[in-house]
Amino acid sequence: MDKLFDVDLTLKLLGLPFVLTALLAAAILGLLAGVLGPLIVSRNMAFSVHGTSELALTGGAAALLLGWDVGQGALAGAIVAALVLGLLSRRSSDYDSVIGVVLAFGLGLGVLMLWLYKGRASNKFGLLTGQIVGQDFAGIALLSGCAVVVLVLLALLYRPLLFASVDPEVARARGVPTTALALVFAVMVGAATALGVRTVGSLLVLALMVTPAAAACRVTASPLKATVLAVVFAEVSAVGGIVLSLAPGAPVSAFVTAISFLIYLVCWVVSRSRGRVRA
Amino acid sequence: MTDPNLPDGARAVALSAARLAYGDRVLWDGLDLDVAPGEFVAVLGPNGSGKTSLMRVLLGLQKLTSGTVRIAGSPPGRGNRAVGYIPQQRALDPTVAVRGRDLVGLGFDGHRWGLGLGGMRERRRRVDTALAAVGATAYADRPVGLLSGGEQQRLRVAQALVGDPRVLLCDEPLLSLDLAHQRAVSTLIDERRRATGAAVLFVTHEINPVLPLVDRILYLVDGRFRVGTPEEVMTSETLSSLYRTDIAVVRVHGQIHVVGAHGHLSDLCEDNPHHHLADH
Image 1: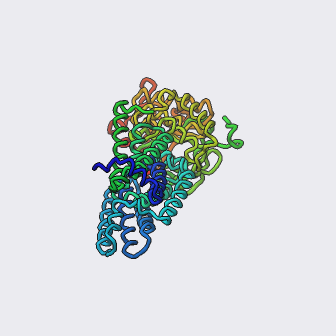
Image 2: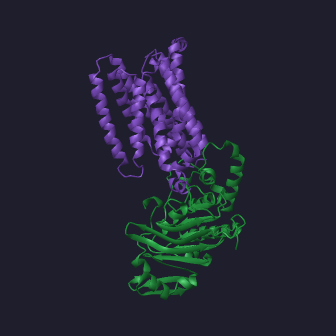
Image 3: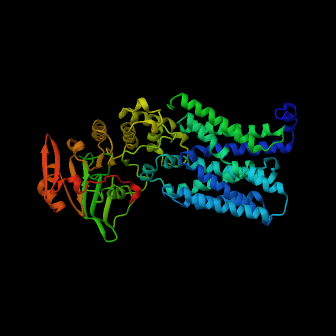
């Protein structure tokens, strides 16, 4: 435990190229999660993000078994999941249970495929809890490419998407194609989720996709401020989590989730003490 | 009354020989309705008579089975800037992180693509004006979910009016508001239509809160309908023939009470006025 806050060791490790690559990946992921998060929270999509991330794991496991690229497998799994979940109406009363059903089946399938895989055990564990330090150039390229596509799409769709998320009935009346937008947004979230799975693992992707935004929405009701805060919170969690994990050599996820949870707690206390009157 | 923003002689709303049917069920047929700019038309009728479907047709969310419809001089289309819409009062989710001014801003340009960074100043000016016009400036920066029903509905009026529509479609906007807020919101809508010359189509199951503002009534019952001034439509004779049963219309203290053979009309048909655009 004395290695937990070893500053010298941390600084030395920060100079290593693979650590810098990992930090870059975390920073891109934090940006993605931060900008998408407030919309995910507004749309009550936390559980569907969780479902999508579990199915990214299934896709990754399938890729591992078949000898394909794990990152691309996870991406494919997440996008298929997002399309399936996006096609279900959010209004339908069995939406949550359908996610549960699909999630459980997909996860079971993933476990079976991981068992069938006879390669290195760390590859399996990495899918569950992330292996950011194993990022290679191809992984970073995929991450950056997806990030650019998602950010450009989001800039293009932002206003109708916000309208459809917070006020769907009037948005529909004003001609916003809410159903199509729901599908596009689900795919964007799916792509970001799959990239998160590579970094913090499928079990903990919510720590980046939902927790920072949920914390931000506790302390502000301005969509712009919420987005900025969510990005800051996500960056602090992702980048800070990696830095803290270096010296003890502990799993990144533990630190990422701890930091984001702490931020959420602080925001919760702030909103309580203000009596929930926010501006 | 003519509207300088509409093509010469154009009606705010023009329905001609309009028919709407779902399979065998005919909601209305042969409906002719011309609404002049600045006119306030109340749409009344029991549940399931096609009031909300009429709104959907005018918003371009539902196609007529036959006949023609034009609104603000053009066919109904998605995202017609000339049409404002006020939904029923329904509490917005308290967890939704938007302020009143954001809700109104979405009414201004929420349907446009892009971030709209270029028009920020104009947007802010228009939103501030709309907020001031409905007296919502004081709570414009509070989260909408924490506001009362009356405050939310004022924001709805601002949201619908911020785009300066030529036609305002209101679908039971007073539902679940108390009397004081019903009066405040309906007066607000009336003031704005007088100031801007916008036509108002106002779906309601309760005529009295808007009776002093109404120019004409469209009364829909079971595929039949009648259009006319309140004096013409709200009579025992007219309603009896619409409902095909004995109906007595009683005027007390400037209010209209409709009494059916089995007691108050609400026992006959006004059981559940709650509905959503998306339910149909």
